[in-house]
Length: 487
Image (tube, rainbow, N blue to C red; front, side, top):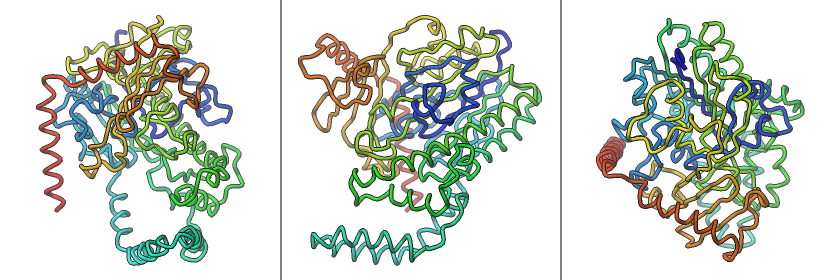
């Protein structure tokens, strides 16, 4: 392990584990990452500690359960120890290039520990402000829609007519895919990261890159569609698919008609992230850094395409949302041991201490996870804990954070889900029922249920610790300051 000085962490928003080639997906979404996986540790059951982004990243960056400071605390607390702060304290140059995710901003503490922090949110904020100026028509539509929905037959009819009006009359000419894309492309993020890497000059570094290309709305570059063989999806068709997929007034059966086409757009976004990862590695090779750094690639969560009746990534802990890819490449570790897949559950809570272990830096006592590096050649049967707050789809509104908890305990084969709001628990046998369609009866697998319930109870009692109250207070004071500043 001597000389493995630097660390690169790549996180790709909304990337499902079952949509990458190295975990069995048939479409060519990840040819470069497939080649990288052949010389890396691959984890087929990497599990996010929470869904969505704001419940996932406290575990990734600070090895801390998302609700440990209380349900009303989002992000990293001021002065909370993180992967970045540890490595900067150890003399590393630190940089983050994040493709415009508002939940990974200084507002939520993610700039802490970075010498260079670029979240690309300035342009997005300007677009949002411009969008709010043209609200007269929107307000008028809301009033008319409310009136129509009071008369049952008119409500659905109005919704359909208004949708068609927006598509064909209000904006008849579809902009290009690039113009419709909400987030910066992976190419831009890699350009900035490569420029920063060119100036490292031998200093050990920690680089964090977050890509948004698979995230909705699904507007991949035209080149990505061509690489996937999807030449027939026009700009207008992509706009129509995204608009229809985003409708709240249609049922699952109508949405299913467009599911495969929407998945093609999503897959093209993955392919573009894969292409840019190849560019990043080529830059590292040019700079003579590739064999001097550990690289880890994962996702904050997956994406739902009606598997359980939903879309996108609302706070839930179904498999399509919590199971993510995880690849860790460590130079000078034998290819034979690297190429083996690890099938036991790997919580992303354990990612930061594991990565620190690969570069011989000890983890702080504040980390709740443990390094799995010593166990990568053995069958470690630890369970992964996932938690989120039901219904919290906009954490900028503090009141939305206070809903009931959803808790999951995930082993390699079994998964227990406890929904405190619904007052129910469900046990799934993922070997026989990988789609989580049929929970086991209360009388089945009693020993397994008891074991996972014991682990859930242990988590609820011990996830918060004595020293966490100070961090909680700092985070709440930051929220209050933000609210005051926005008045």
